[in-house]
Image 1 (cartoon, rainbow, N blue to C red):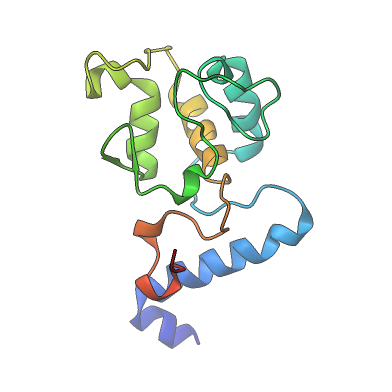
Image 2: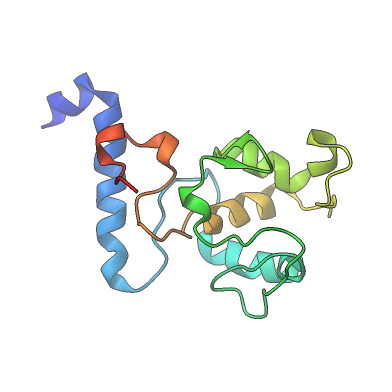
Length: 147
């Protein structure tokens, strides 16, 4: 098994994702992508503290019922964010921290979110999935269910 995983690095990712999704029976958030130094539980609290729910619907965040920005339900399944940016951890962290630098004039404001808070937020967002598989662009095509 170990030799097979070394020979096919993509399979290592699939195995890790499979193991992560098997933990969903425990009732807690399931991490689909690992965000270096990010904590989903801190991220859930950080989303509330920064007031993100004033603009977004965010499952699991009390009072997060905003309608200005898109709902963040199923965030982990999205291939793109913010109208065309790849849904990749580093990109999402950058977007949360400096949306006006990336897309000047966007409705999303620069809130002065520190790096650690952004990493925690992204770690939480990657627990928000309906299909429990994670972002489609990070999975091998044979694992993506047909619509």
